[in-house]
Length: 316
Image (cartoon, rainbow, N blue to C red; front, top):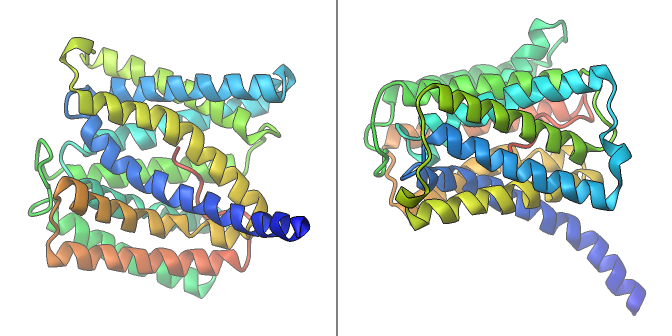
């Protein structure tokens, strides 16, 4: 009887972990929205990654030991480059854009990452499947619709409604995709948690320096409680919990199954934006978002037949 319960737990825990990834990463866009209510975006994001990287690094040191952080020069270059492109460029531009675009709309646009990766593979000599090419073309049509419609009618109370919000999200996605693509082809440390810790520390430092250079200042007394809670949620639960759950799910479930978070997260982000923050979406925005998600499903399904690597990497 005990063995049956253990077997049931082994089958259930990976799915629970994947559910945690769905919810936590899907909620990051809503949390960012509340952070920038009273925090400067780049400094807030930078200190969040510094806190998350330090905590994750300490846990790795205690559990595995300091040898985990021993890196060759090539591995250190990978960590530095991915720290620049993933947390600094990717997340940094996303939180900047969220002052001009609703959290749900931002999540729909950032779902373009697998499409970018498919294009990068093609440019560098990989011969894509026809389904992949079709998925990229469908996704481009959906993204074009989202950008042309813009944030009008869907800002849901964000601080601005400028035209550059959606394009900035697409630029963030390009950086994230490039970092994902390069990291998968360069030498990386054996322990993914050590790599994630170094990535966050490097990315967080870049964001803090950049924010300071561009005049951002942090005044703790002026920060609203909702921003503090959202920041703590991102620093602790998202940076630590989501990545740990992702690593466990990836080790126990098929890659194609884990990669579904790329199109489940935007759906959760849209629902949270509507229910919690009262964000509104026009029919054209919803249509564009649906087209993008269909395209992502097509690309991940096609790529999953030819590669054991995930089509996307975590955004924690």
